[in-house]
Image (cartoon, rainbow, N blue to C red):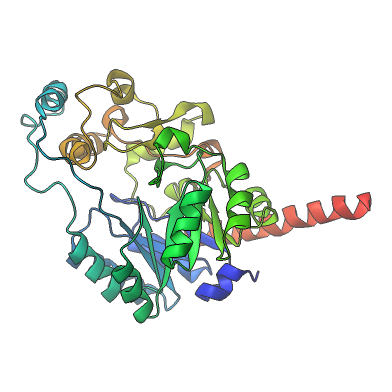
Length: 360
């Protein structure tokens, strides 16, 4: 299937595996998706530069196909910060999980320059980013290495701004999408536009290829996105349950039984709005409480709790990121999922063509 996206990146299928930071995106997952004709994308966020390079080497050892790498744009950090309430809220949970009292780590954010340098050295064909605008020098550096640059937008204005900045493609992230919101120009609550509404408006507003993202789980969703003018799709939750995913066992178990109505956008795990399956920590932590710090401080402070919960197979204290399409998730090898998605897309497209043909 040829689209503006597949031609731009040199892949066979208009399917992109979303970069899921914090463990789910393994080199095996990226290699499997790329090897099957889609574009697998490494998540550089939260990873040390040397680990980004090692992961890229692992991908390249498994496939010669193009792959991508993703990073988080730095978020402005607050000045003086009082974390007393946040630590008090987490203290009993730490005790429950056998952890020492919570302490803010000395380093709460990635070294952006070092992470960017690793991404540029990774051998990836695509550099994607979220949380804002990539500095002009970074876009120029990526282009100088022959990389395609892809930014994330949650509104039409954000997409237009990214195109002006020089990106080669835009991910239109609908409000149904799982994990962190990429919003950067307006308040988050003003940017929860549904995928079906957002994609055609972004397509009409920019000239670069648009990737649809948000609750796209099967070929029906892909065919719908293409019909709306998208040149491809980015799927996260669909690949979270694949054999090669590094998602914790407790996370997988919750994905298997969650309904679409059981996801919610929350700040309580990282300090930045993200969609996940509702659990005890989300229910017991008020979004506007002093116990919820800004990103990346909240993310740093809850990391020990989340890690211990994963080891204990306790989903109640994990960030269970998932989109509203989670009931449609199907566990299988990633390459098999790519093949299945393309067969389903062809079937759905033929069905629509038949309906249109009979109507005419």
